[in-house]
Length: 454
Image (tube, rainbow, N blue to C red; front, side, top):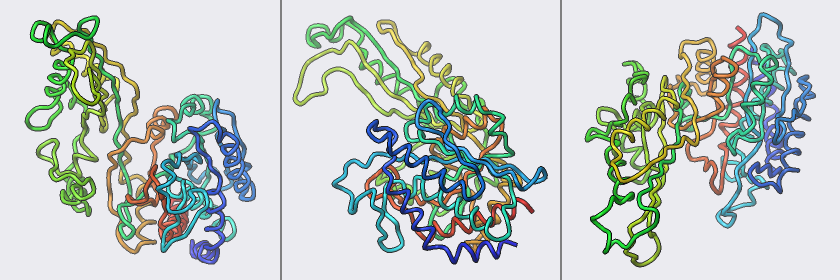
């Protein structure tokens, strides 16, 4: 049934690439105030492409850059309603001198299109829009679609939660399709069915009211830097497990099938060592590096600050010490419960002589979708139809806060289906999108929507 749409997409590949280049020329950098006009230009660019498709796109004020919304519900009450999520903002380009070509003048080199936002994630948005166009111009759009495309993802989706709460009825759907995703490799079709959450903390310790001479007072008073180092050392046991009380109580264990599937991915322990440049791997014993990095909870120090850190020596006994700590969480862990666990750890282990505070700076829940759900099966079938290989199931170690927001506020699951590659240089100089994946992505979305409707 989708052959006509696929033929249409095949015949319009050059125009699809031209459209992608067009939006990539807009420097929609959300974190830099001077690019506010470019943010509006990018939003209007998308609206101008939604209107001919019958979506009546519009920009909605969300307190920051506009949220682009558009819907087409012509498939009828019996067809599923998909909320397609994306973002049109991009990261800054610094350091500019490391770019081979102008980051906002797209350039094709070999099989790759280089530009800021090519993979993250304007290319993914255009792939879906072009799939919808192919269906509209041939067999018709078989599912109901609502687009939610924001402009603040790269700065934490600051106003999105408020927007979701205020527009719950407008955004009502059967599930969310997040196209800000990727596959393991150019010849390895894969589907992300779970992502980790996060709880991010700042720990502050204070001892004497001011810095002291370590020769005069060292050994006589409690040193906050020593205490903090000891506390951090106690946050893991000799098996690599996190020692916060109750940390693992709500962890959803991996099934035997999941462990088998993850073991079959082309991501051996050697692969992780090569990707990271680390000579040795570490972490929780009893699990592979892939399991530890994508499907098990973690606690890591992200930064430390105390005392004198300049060149040379200064014999100071610091009055304060601070650490930034992130925990990556898995289903069904609650970030707020982890906050309480960290506080309980500090209460039990912090000695007299220092006062302490623990602030949670950011939180996002983990998410998992049933691999046997209608949408997941349709996605796996679509990937196999286009690549000619069975789709591999993978979990993602990173955090996508919007997935948790949508699940919490709209009460729907999110399917992650996108076509970026691990080496696409996201957030770095020379970001690229593998063009065969761009065109395969269009075809996959066509298959996916057709299969879902059936």
